[in-house]
Amino acid sequence: MRGYLLISHGTYAPALKSSLAMITGELDQVVAVGLEPSDGPESFTAKMDAQLAKMTAYDEIIVFTDLLGGSPGNEAVKKFMANPRVHIVAGMNFPMLLNTVLSEGIDLSAVVQSGKDGIVDVKAFIQASSTDDDE
Image 1 (tube, rainbow, N blue to C red):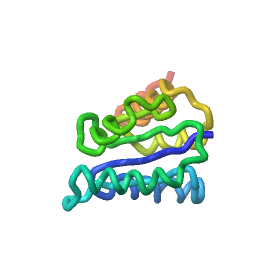
Image 2 (tube, rainbow, N blue to C red):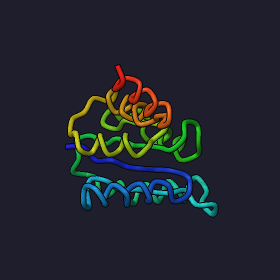
Image 3 (tube, rainbow, N blue to C red):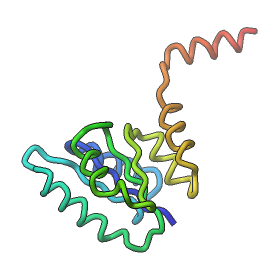
Image 4 (spheres, rainbow, N blue to C red):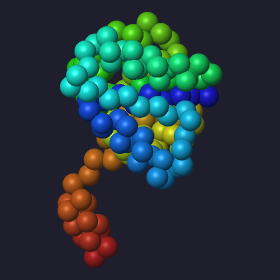
């Protein structure tokens, strides 16, 4: 079974966890940590470790981070790069998280693709759909 660690700058990760709970209900396998302006690398890592302590039962953990190359993700890379049971995905968004937690065992490439698929120019999509319906 998988656990999910959401990490971000500020309250983005905790807010995404809260939004997930609105749809899925509370999920014990999802934890979130935000890097606050007062945090340094050590305090952020300590907060991450505190959340990870809740995840010892999971065979696999996916760490979702908000930004490739950002401090939260960099700390995760330092901590988990050599750990084969931990995967790190940057650029997390709500469609990606929702699809992943609802699809146990989803392949990592499909996780990334679902994040990309969730990014849509809505007006262009609607206009294209209207054009398709007219034909």
